[in-house]
Length: 94
Figure 1 (tube, rainbow, N blue to C red):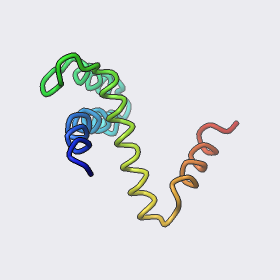
Figure 2: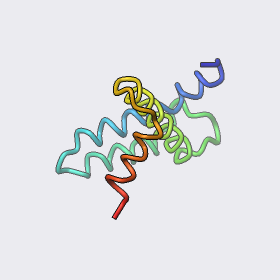
Figure 3: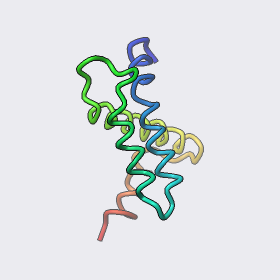
Figure 4: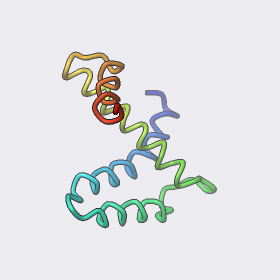
């Protein structure tokens, strides 16, 4: 990764990882996940002045999804486009 991209990822991935960790641990208590989302959006530490916390979290979650998709593709030998098509069929197709 380039220096600028590394810096950007280091700014947005920690919040995404915190939110998704809470999601994975929330089980039957969605309030645990929701509290993590609210905490991340309210936390200004390390955030550049004027940065939009919702945009940063969205970018972080998108980057995390891309990283996980690449890892799943590498470990399964399936192309990312095929993985996404399967997810679409499984969760969105009626």
